[in-house]
Amino acid sequence: MMSQGQGLRLISYQSRPIVSHPFLLTAHTLKPSRSWNHFSFKTPGMPKQFHLQLPLPLPSHNSHQTQTGTQDDGIPIDDVKLIAKFKTRYNYIRVLQVSRRADHPFAGSRLLLLDSPGNIHSISFLFKSLTNTYFDVFATLPPILPPGAVGILGFGAGSTVRLMLELYPDLIIHGWELDPSVVAVGREYFGLEKLEKQYPNRLFISIGNGLKASIRNGFAGILVDLFSKGSLIPELQEPSTWHKLRKSLRKGGRIMVNVGGSCVEAEDERRNGKMVMEETLKAMHRVFGDKLFVLNLGNRKDDDSSLALTGELAVPDRDAWKKALPRSLKGYVDMWAPYQG
Image 1: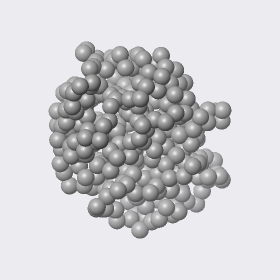
Image 2 (image 1 turned 90 degrees about the horizontal axis):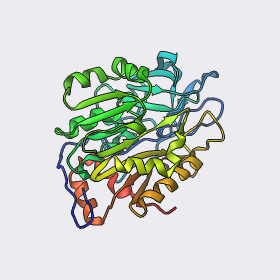
Image 3 (image 1 turned 120 degrees about the vertical axis):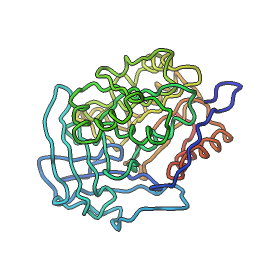
């Protein structure tokens, strides 16, 4: 990781690419809904199809995508099965299974929805670790971090964890999730229990408020994915929160954040996704200044989705970062741009 006067410490990893670019998820019933990082599934009013939109592909020399479905194609309702549905103190939990027969990039996937609008919070595939969503961008963070553990605040069912544990053999992950039922669902339906048994000394999950997360000597990196009722939690629009999170990092540590955008649909219409995203970035900028970068994964004005990254990111550092990633993830590196508030 780069601090002032130092170069990046990089963990090298090379492998055959599985996929080449992320997908933008949008489902709608009576009206178009907006979601890339959160797939929308509305009830009642069951549609005949779930319509999904794909963004422009990342720069790539190779693609292993085999589906013939296009950006405007939907998934027939017969190819989507609801396998769990219940409410908890914090969430309206639903688990969906998309048939492997579906002519769509999400064929064979399992999806976790946690709020009334039906935003997706976790996705997994049986035979691959890449999800083609922002979770894969999260998995690019470790090579530009100093030695140490990574914290995931808003663990969900563990969509990012599987890929990260496979890519980085020495990585230790501490996850925080507020709702114990979400972790239970992850263990039952998303393979989380198997991961915990496979990596007992590398994966640790705590139930509680992620904003109170801490470990001895601080985190090397933090992934923030904190949503409630379909919106980024209000604390993320407060500079004091980012001051606290920065203090929980060890020297040279970084934070990567899912800041949402127009794609996110909140239960409270006043919590407009784009507005909340902008307020969150402003709060981060007050703390991190010009060491704040943004990656936009949307392909339309009204359907954007963004991530934020703290720390310095010079051109030589980007080149080294790309060399440390498998081909399927390299394209994300050049997509980061300085925050232009």
